[in-house]
Image (cartoon, rainbow, N blue to C red; front, side, top):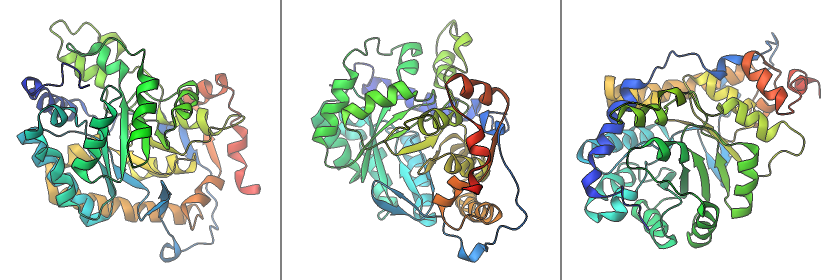
Length: 362
C-alpha cells in the first residue's frame, strides 16, 4: 500500500524538499567526521599508480568506493536533477540510488522521473528506493521501473513524525521489510535517511533478511529541519540534530564485541574525499553522498558535478597512497584517533577506541 500522503496532489512536496535541502545544506559545518584523524606514517611504501580504489558491494565490484545516494524524483524539476545526476554518475563510473519512488507507484505517469536514471546511466549500478509501507508487489515494480541492481528501503520514522502529512504508525515495519526482501529479485539494503542506525536496529534488520544496511547518520541533510520548515509554527525546531552520526554508527556496528554480520554502507554528512576514506577505514564497504553533490549540481551545474566526481576519485586514491593502503580493505588496518564528543559517546556504547590506534602493528 502507498500511504495517503504519497499522492500526485502532493508532488509539489518533492520540489519543496529539493529546495529546502539545497538551502539548508551547509558543506562547511563541523560534524563527527572531524573527530576522526589518521596517524601519519612517513614511509607508506605505496604509489598512486598501484592504488586500487575499487570495492565489492552485494558481490559486485564497484570501481569507485563512493556513490550518489538517494535524493529525489517524480516531478518535472526533479526529473532534470535525476537526469543530470545519472549522467554524471555514468561518466565517472559511480553507482547511483534514486529517491523514494512512492509517487510513481501511485501515479505511473510520474515514473519518467525515475526511469531517466537508467537511460542516462545504462551500465551503472542503480539502486531503487521505497519505504516499508509499500506492498511486496509495488517493491517489485519499483525495481523493474529502474531495471535496478538493488533496492533501498528507507527508514524515516523521525521524518514522518515531523512531516505535516506524515505516517504515525510504525508497528508492522519489520514484517513489511521481511515481505519485501522475500519478494524482490535483487539485494535489499535498509537505509536510514539521516538519523543513524543503532546496533539494536541492525540486529532487528538482520532478522528481516536484508543484504546490507546504510547507516545514513546525522550531520548532513536533516529531514527534521526540512519538515519543520513546512510546518506553520515550526514547532519541532528543538529536534534538529537528532540521531547518531555515521561515525558513531560505524563504531557501534563494527568495533564493539561481536560486530554485526551485515555488510555496512555509510552516508550522512560526507563533505570531502577524506570523509569517504574515514568511513572506509571504519569498515564501511562504500560511502553514499547526497547533499554535497546535489548542491554542486544545483548551484554550479552538471559539468562541475562531473569534474567533482572525477576529482573525488583521484583524491581517494591520493589519500589511500598517503595511508599506505593499496586496496580499500587495507584502510581497515590504518591507525585512527577518535576524539571529542564522538569518543565520549563511543565509550558509553562500549567501544574500545585504543584498538583503532594500533591497528597497523597487527
